[in-house]
Length: 299
Image (tube, rainbow, N blue to C red; front, side, top):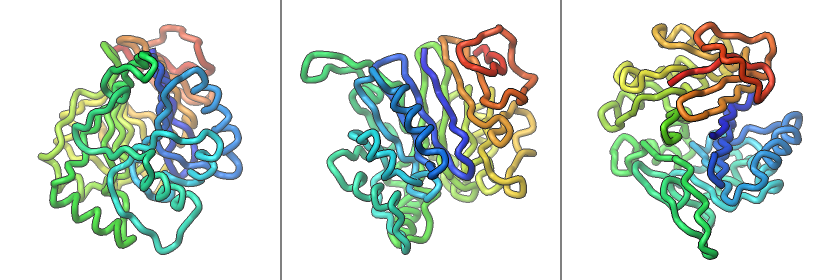
């Protein structure tokens, strides 16, 4: 069993996965002075007892690395996963400064399509002969030789744009859920690489760019993934693409707030921190591991 939590952090993204193995994964960081103590305390509690903690940075835009320095100071990031890049910014925040320090340190592991690593997607023993299990994380993008991607890296190098150097992350549980994160990829760029990425059947899909219209996923990709649930992020009402993907079930983080997915074999039990939020497409299996049960997705 594993637990995925999509944290309600306003205009940004932050997630964690508490794996069934001895792994814990944090994806992106969007902390504020108001929420950081609560969120980091929760992360410390949930990762306690796990031997391997990794931080995955989908890309270095401000709302995905906000107060990364605070998170690092509090938990000590030892495994920092990011795409290889030379991104710069005209105005250096403490979060971006820490991103660059980690990116350019020996703590960094560069993400690219098909990369393998012990405990990320391979089993293996540590120096004491202990196997900490496999996290089930695979990288579907980027292809570092793709010309469109190289062009986006150049833009990031000169501080022009960062969204389209996002990686695509797949997490899959043995005999259970498959989950996809796409960072802040934008529609025009996705169209340019449409034949360069292969997707599996997907159970949970976190819509790119917080569910904004600028991040609408191409039809070819949506059909390939055929997601059971699309989680729309906390973009404001004017930017949100709530009308997109009419054939698919959606959860709206603006309303649901924190969303927790308890993945147990062929079931995903879903919870919202908003007691008033509800959806009509899940089965009621009367589960109560966490507060405010929404229902169960049977895979």
